[in-house]
Picture (cartoon, rainbow, N blue to C red):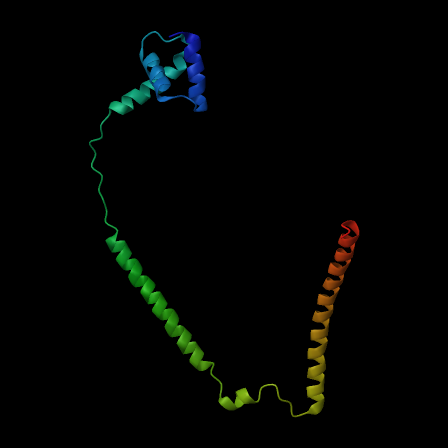
Length: 152
C-alpha cells in the first residue's frame, strides 16, 4: 500500500471517519517491518492495540452484594421518617390554642383602634390595586399602538 494512501487513511482515523476495514489496514501496515520513517511515531500505538487484544485477564473480581447497604439504608430512612412525623405531632400539639382565643381574632374593644387598623388595611389594598391599574394602562397603550400599525 502506498505511503500517500496510508497517510490519508491515518488522517481519516484521527478524525474518526474510518471504517473497520481501513482500521484493519492501518493495524496490518504498522505491524509490518517496513513502516515509513515519518510514520514510525504511530507504530507503538497500533502495536499496543494488537497486544492488548491478545491479552487475557486471569484476575478474579470480587463481587460485593448490595443487600446489606440497602437494608441499612432502608432502616435509616424509616427512622428519619418516624422521627419527623413524631416531631411534627409533638410540635403541633403545643401550638394548639384554646377555642375562645380563636373566636376573638380580629375584634377590637376600642373603636378608634378598629378604625386605624381598617384604614391601614384599606391603604395597603389601595396601593396594590393602583399598581395593577398602572399595568393595565400600559396594555391599553400597546393595544392602541398595535391597532394603528395593523389597521383592522
